[in-house]
Length: 556
Ligand SMILES: Nc1ncnc2c1ncn2[C@@H]1O[C@H](COP(=O)(O)OP(=O)(O)O)[C@@H](O)[C@H]1O
Ligand SMILES: N[C@@H](CC(=O)OP(=O)(O)O)C(=O)O
Image 1 (cartoon, rainbow, N blue to C red):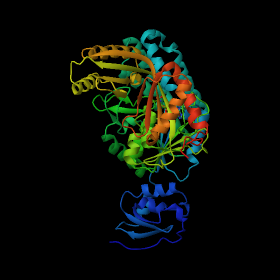
Image 2 (image 1 turned 135 degrees about the vertical axis):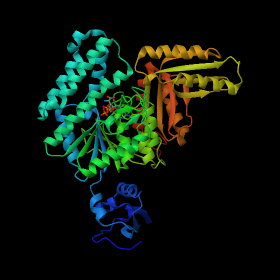
Image 3 (image 1 turned 90 degrees about the horizontal axis):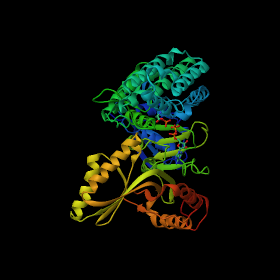
Image 4 (image 1 turned 180 degrees about the vertical axis):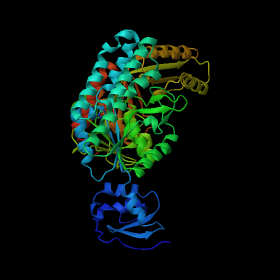
């Protein structure tokens, strides 16, 4: 039964906040929190729209007025109950929780948003994951009696003990894990073997400890928190150790567990990033380096939250890697597609798969700087105004292998292409950039997913051996892919400028691909020329006012 009514005290929002006339349905939880006076930005409007997915209330905005005009058969009492729903994900990477001081600052930062009820996702402290992997590698050859002398083990113990001491929480919070870690390293020393499965088990200690410390600290300062190991609450993955994919069942399982716990006894959930549980093996898996971003977006989609925040040590996604050029500037807006390409083609700032759940759930992702929370950061959404956009960011992927494959004409044209790609499929090797002619294919292979260098060489030898049955193969190593992320609708302008820069710098482009992507043009150059190219391109696209472009790489 629909009934019309108005909420008392509704303030008139400025008309630019809303389209002239629109109406949509809004769920009770959100309605109960409506603060109409605050809808001053398109961002608030987006939030409102996002919360309108489950059809309970109909809200009408006309000429800037916001009226609730229809009410379905929902008990008033549910408004109060739902008020406490979780609102967003806040993910903090290793750089944000590297020390006791940082952990305190992150806790303060979370509490500085009193209207948020976040799910917090944490990575391991600082460089703990790298240290754990090194410790594992050393254990293989050091002998059981020498395990306690492994430098990285000492470092990890010292870091975690110092952190709990400085935060004033009990040492037992981490002692069990530190003891188990040492036992595990002894086991590796005994077996003289470090499998991918064991690597995942070793690195899991990092996130398991950082989340326990953080939850204990929140409890200590009087904020109710509950620690979760992702592999215990429904993060189900493939059994591809070190690079597992999240399976669909995860979404409902994680939503149920977090919502049930929250509804029965609210406490801020503190979840381990990066980790999952293999669906067949039931062993701990990891989602690939930097995988906590993916944990965060998976939770965001599972719970249908308003926003996913990933807090880093930079002011958002930048125009290029700041380690290559320190003058890189923050990019204010990106689409999911741009962010995914950027991550896939090597920008370390986001995990390559992390945009998928956010895009599927249409949940905005905000990249922020935990060292500089006032900086606006980068907002990643489904769409943005591309009318002025030309170039958004320049990304470099180093140490890429390129293959030139020329048909020996044993197969027809179709048979040739099909055969070449079936070889890659059979060997499970992913191809990045491709350019083809009738009888030849140039392509690049991405070795970064493999953790062991020896394996890469072995696999390459195997690929070449198979391809040589049907083609002449030229293997070119030490190449880099420079990806120009932006508005490919303006490819002529981008290419004209890019080739101008490259010619001036005497660089020969060995392959170019615009491909199906609407946002990426890839150029392959030699590794040793690549960084200089990125700096020169950055200067040309983002720092000089050339005809057709303003300073930010936008068309004028
Ligand atoms: N285009 C880029 N924009 C921002 N940061 C980038 C970019 N390319 C590389 N980076 C690097 O990514 C780092 C942030 O990612 P990451 O180390 O995974 O953060 P965290 O561990 O905090 O999650 C930055 O410190 C920066 O050095
Ligand atoms: N600790 C893991 C997972 C992760 O996401 O880390 P970070 O958020 O610091 O990139 C890694 O180092 O890969």
